[in-house]
Length: 126
Image 1 (cartoon, rainbow, N blue to C red):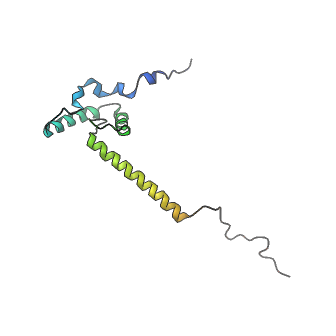
Image 2 (tube, rainbow, N blue to C red):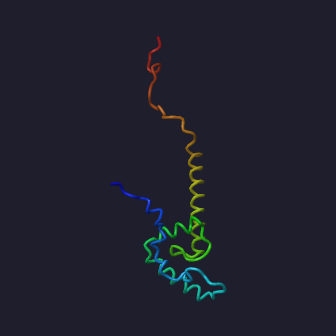
Image 3 (tube, rainbow, N blue to C red):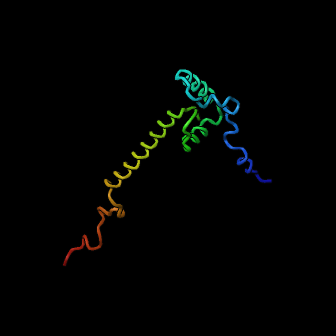
């Protein structure tokens, strides 16, 4: 009897999300919401996210899409934009560091044979 994995496709990560039991309006802003109300709503949504068993999966989904609105994975849209900008900056820095390392190291030609003598070295001419 083999292990069945087909149920994973029928049961995506979001089926276990804590937000599925809460009102969707908590995670998405109504139009013309006053700032104080928005901040309070987002804080409440983040509290729901904090106890969610799929918080990281949700966050990575929102970053990969990228989701432009709402609280996903405990982050607001503005917070996700900051995370994405930091990731892009880090990736660029890594690319630049790799390029610099290649310039400093130069091309790899093979192991050096420093200190070895060939058969013609050490012979006495005569």
